[in-house]
Structures are given as structure tokens and as C-alpha cells.
Length: 234
Length: 115
Image (cartoon, rainbow over all chains, first blue to last red; front, side, top):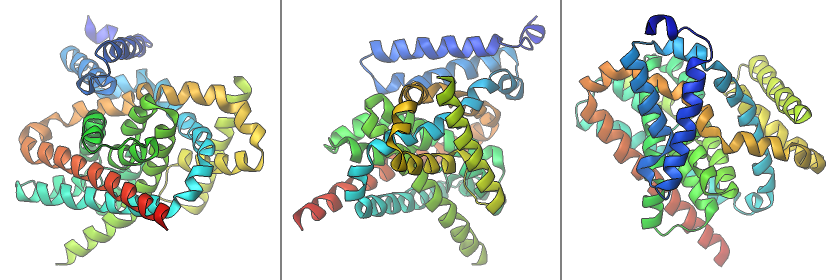
């Protein structure tokens, strides 16, 4: 029965919309407990349902393409909060670039060295390197370094979720109160999923997360192929 | 609402055209975003017109990343085979990245203020 049902257009779209609303309600009721992060809850629930019903991700993706298409205009729409922060941005351009550069290098170096020390395969190491870049940029990097694209989905998605989940606790521990600093730290670490999380805090954090996400993507796209080529030569 | 969505899509299209024309390694919507920031600076009334629609979209970014994020389930074999290095590298790496970024920014902002 499921084989027939899962092909019905709208079914998975409705499941996803319901799961998202339920996850948001749970997240709010838990007093924004990071373990109840809506992306984490939805991926676990919907992913589990797909596995249980034997539905492929391809079928699912076709069904919910509408949401994915809206990600394009939503990315463009980040320009509005960013434009609102332009005045503040001009006063902190150099510190911001410095922080994102240090963060991007840390992301690549720490992931690859920890993975290597724990015996990860070369393919996994290549996929760990750009884990803080957004998906679209990571796929571009996969093409140049020759790592399997699907593997990037794993490391990039897990980084986004873990960054979004740990943000509140870790930044609280470090006593970072400035929403701009919080946003930059979350966006550099956890790309789009982190930016979505930062928008839950406030628009300022969201705007700076979006900016940091873009800068991290650019820097990672420049750094990883260079490093991969350097490592490949030795 | 319809006018605002049309503007957003037109800026995305402009971004896609530039990315393809110059074969840039960047996503088209990101370039569209930069173009829109520039356009809003040049004509601030545009930002006002787009504010409601833009707010609706950015508030629900989490919903819009779900189709791609669920792709995680296609990689479960690899995850079970190498779960330890992947999990430790991802979580420790993220914590280090966030700490380094936050502390660098706070410190260099404080240094700028002193000068």
C-alpha cells in the first residue's frame, strides 16, 4: 500500500509541513532547548518515516521540491536584514573578515586532523574539509577535489545540525552577548542551518550569520582545493 | 506580496545569469542577494517594499532546508561504517570553529574600540 501512497503528490509535502509545525511547537514548549532543534527533530522524524516506508530520498525530494525551490528567493531575501545592518557592518569590516578567516581555517584543520587521527578513510577526510561551507559550495568543491558528492551531504548536514544545537550553550558559556558576534560565529560554523537558527534568536544575529555563511563559503572554496592539491603532492 | 516575490525571483535570476556567464564557483541566489543589497542601498524604498515577504521567507529557513537535509538518509551505510571519526570530527570541529570565530571577533572588535 505504501508503495502506491508514497507516489501521491502532496503527501510528503503535507507530512513535512505538519512535522515542521509540530517540531516548532515542541521547540517552543521546551523553552528553546537545543536538543529540540526543529531541523534535528524533522530530519529524524521524516528520515525515519522514509526508511520505515522504504521511500527513496529521490521520491521524497520530488514531492517536496516546492520547498527546495523557495530556498532560492529566501536566500535573496537575506539581503533585507543584511541591508538593515549595513551601517554597523561598515564599522566592523576588518574584524569580521579576520574572524571568518580564522574560523574557516579552524573548521578545515580541526575536522581533517581529528578525522585523520581517528582513522577516517581518505574519502571521508576530503568530505570533512569543507563541512562548514554551504551545500551548494561544498558540491562545487567536491567536483574539483574528486570526492563523492553524496558524502558531502553527510558531513555538511551533520555540521549544520550540531552547530545549531550547540550554539546557545557554547556561546552562553563564552559569554558572547553581542548578537552580531553570535551570528557571525553561528554562520561561520553551521552555514544555512545555523543561519536559520540565528534567525530564531533575532534579525541582527540572522543577518550577520547569513553574511558569515557567504564569506565562509567563498574562503572554503578557495582554501580546500588548494590544500587538497598540496596534500596530494606530498 | 506578488510584486515582492517577483522582485526576489528577478534578483535570483540576475544572480544565476552572472554565475553562469562568468562560471563563478558561487550559488546564483547568493550573488542575487549581493545585487539586492546594492539595489537597496541605491533605493531604500525597495527594502521597505520587500520587507514583509522577506521576513516570511527568512523566518522559515528551517523548513526550506529540509528537502536537502533529509538527504542524510542516503549516507547511513557510510555513517555506520565510520561513525566515530565522522561524529567526533564534526562535533569537536564545530565547537572549535564556533569558539575561535566568536573569540577572534570579540577581541578584534574590542581592539578597534580602544584605538
